[in-house]
Image (tube, rainbow, N blue to C red; front, top):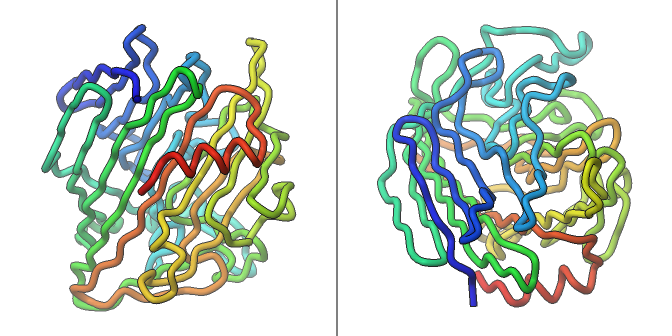
Length: 309
């Protein structure tokens, strides 16, 4: 049985979710930060374990546009919805502010709070740098399964994106633009500084470097914190249809680093570009389990089996 949660809403700013003892485990900020170079868009930060340990980073000095958990698109028809410098083959990373787009929060179509669950449907518009509206997004956020005995809770994050242009949207990544093994795009997590050098593993592999660009149903990232005597584990999991070639618009691969920065992305265009036709839509569903302790493969597998989609 899930534990009770409390939800507060500072209108125009953010939603916050806390446990019954007052520990804030999630803050979803839908009023974006002001710098357009950082690709203004909603994000989740801070994200904390049930014990109150922070597992997201915000505006780190190496990448100011990294903000907790956020939906991104690093290369989209010549625009950058990731934020920051743009990769240009043969020239490296360049500050090209005219390429940086944004995601506008248009409102919440649904916001339902139950004793142990928050369900949110958010409407957003993806806007290229010149002001043209390129895509309409329906985003789903669900906070659920907070369980003090298991020491974990779950965040489900879904996206349904519709092309509102008169021409195809082309999704890519730095790797599709020519940079090897840098296929970052899609839903991205940035860890705090003390997650640097952490351990990453999947059902059949381990080590961030070896897992880069691989595929699989889930990936876990665990580390020991600074400041407190504790470990935390995050588990990033695909809904089954994400990995179904018959239903997914494009194959997904893991983008994962532990050094020099801690980050994981559910990359939807790691090695190859894909197109979304005018008026067409695609959808993905993801789950992030936030856990206290250093979980191993068996514990992750058992916990995920208890969280049906």
